[in-house]
Image 1: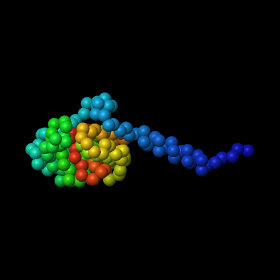
Image 2: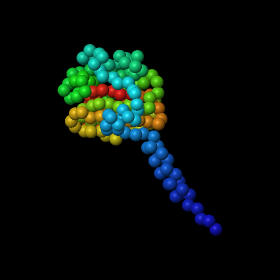
Image 3: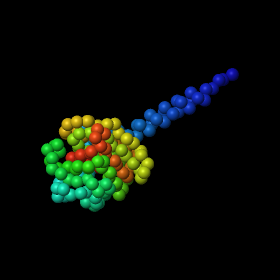
Length: 165
């Protein structure tokens, strides 16, 4: 007579599903590794608009919208790439006009990347960095997403230098 343990089977299935779900997302702390993984991609430098500009639809032609209406371009030595970046005054919420499968950010300080499909959270990254300058955080996904939330996990005041997608 065979004995079966359905509880164990369900537990094993849950572990396998959780492992498969996490394998759908790859995080990067190296821009070179991100570039190699995603190939050619668009980059927003924020030098294309005047300092002090509150970003909204300024990058609509590139397929993205800053939806918070409080993300402003500033000059700051913490932005090591080109001295120009964005002060969010909180979180940075970016919507895409077409589905995406990767996003990356050069940033000072701390960052967490959340990927959404509409209102549904698909993935929340690890907490990148924490203090200092010259950091990169990126995520590549098997699933597509149409919205990204960038959060400074230390003080909830995000700053970004370059935005890659």
